[in-house]
Image 1 (cartoon, one colour):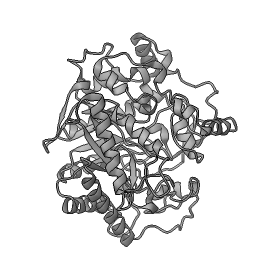
Image 2 (cartoon, rainbow, N blue to C red):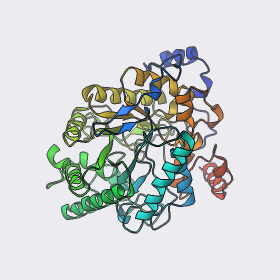
Image 3 (tube, rainbow, N blue to C red):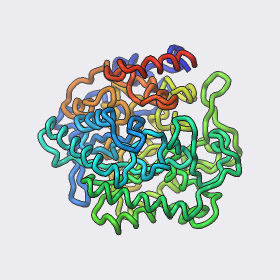
Amino acid sequence: MSTKSKPRFTRMAQLKTASDLRNYLQGSGVDLPFDETLLPPAESPFSRPIQLKSGKRIGNSLCILPMEGWDGTLDGRPSDLTRGRWVKFAVSGAKLLFGCEAVAVCHSGKANPNQLVLNADTFPDFVELRQMVLEQHAETFGNTDDLLIGLQLTHSGRFCKPHSHKAFESKILYSHPFLNKRFGMDADYPALTDDEIDQIIEHYVQAAVLAQKAGFDFVDIKHCHGYLGHEFLSAVTRPGKYGGSFENRTRYLRNIVAGIQQAAPGLEMGIRLSAFDFLPFKKGPDEVGIPESADQYFAFGGQANGLGVDLTETKAVLALVQSLGIQLVCITGGSPYYNPHLMRPALFPPSDGYLPPEEPLLGVKRQIDVTCELKRSFPELIIIGSGYSYLQEWLPNVAQYALRTGMVDSVGFGRMVLSYPSMPADMVAGRPLTRNLLCRTFSDCTTAPRNGLISGCYPLDPQYKKMPEAEQLKAIKEGL
């Protein structure tokens, strides 16, 4: 799918003034509030600190979201490219690093052969990564007293590819009516046994112990984007102690938390949660995304038709999370594998995606609205929002409004910091944004790994522009 084709919707870069944005939102039927004028640093909510019940303090209300890496070594260690990304997180100016990177708890749970893994062998590498972040942050900002560094722990479940960039070695919880076929599994493909799940839980606990020893402030128990933790929440057809009832579908989370609390007392935990989900989407005849057809469909946080939000169970999960003593919750939605427009609104989709089925700003608004509703329902939780990247130069204006009005506690930045690592620092300091560094949602950072290449910002990052993979990616895109 070529980025040369004319987008169906107006590019954000064309909306030069607040009047342009307001008129476009009104004409598109998108009720997305924003502040026309950014407040000076002394009054800006970007600089507002966040106090945790544990006594720890986060220095501002901007966050770097965890990202899956495709550039580690085959035995799960960071490479120079990995370290380069972590330096960008360190110097970004955000005071909350929510997980830094998606780190597998075991080799069989990797989403790609080059994903990082935390175990006894790789432990020294994570000690060095964290220390590097502290040193780089201190060198840039003077101290690290108000910097909170987490590590996202994950098992990729249905999307495991530990030995090949293209061949799935899926670990599933139940036979999915659409995803089994889409990702090459028969309807009778074997599901994980309860004993195997118990072993994965133990891997989480062991990894958390190592993360604490390495000095990380918290671990994120990943429950989003179709990976294993998220799939438990929709496992209504699974028999046994890990499926069916809400109590059973949350047993995995409860057991991981209990194990960590016992083995790593004092370690903070967070959870990145797909708060809503829809039916899987696919390319329609005109390459625009269309949903699979289903009269009744169970999606966690979704309506029965698979095309709307229902936060009843989401709120039940957050009530559970709060009762378990977890305070940090990062909100996202859906999965980049089967409905990417929900969490990554973009004009230019990745090679395995589809053209946007809705005005992308509707996707931004949906995430902001869901996050706001959850924050209002759980005021004691620290809620981090995501899905802001599509806003581009208007991100500060929307983010300021959301923070200023209490819709969210912290605004998260994802892969846009790969091209513009100092964007949070510029916002906090009240500096104008550098427009030619802004992510324009070309999706190269996803198209590359989908085709076996390392992920990076090939259009804007000078380092990646010069790599041989840039020419390979260009050839792949021209052949689509």
